[in-house]
Image (tube, rainbow, N blue to C red; front, side, top):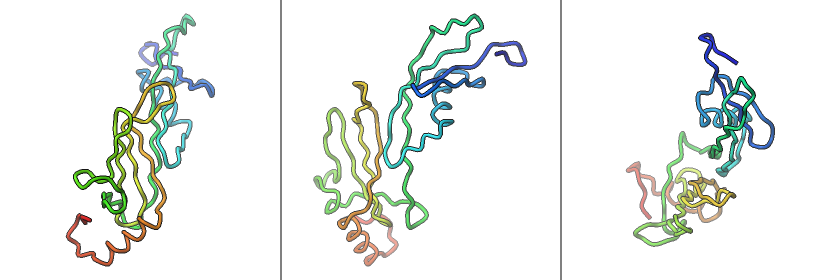
Length: 168
């Protein structure tokens, strides 16, 4: 596999579901990212991490230079009732302490819970999510509105005075 200049290029990538070749990839990271993007990895409402094995193209068939690349597949953000989400941390909804509402220790990191003031969806960011392989990564999860978040959204809309951030 050579380009117009005669340079050998491209990378093989595989996460265990079947290999694919990316002739335009110039690095293992690029091939791994293209692999998960090309696979249409719709992820739902939570981040996941996958390990992709990558190997540069070899004219002599030597595919022993394998690189493992961790790829975080981001979640699909749920739609908001407004143009975009307004993530806030009202302590009466997300809990915690007044100095850092919605923030809780988790392993070697924290989880941060916020709620959208427009639609009541939750966003939970975990800085110590388990990757399933003994490591950790930053993950995001969206959770559906519940009665507490919807009541808060209703109270915010009743008091809406267009001053921006609403502090409960």
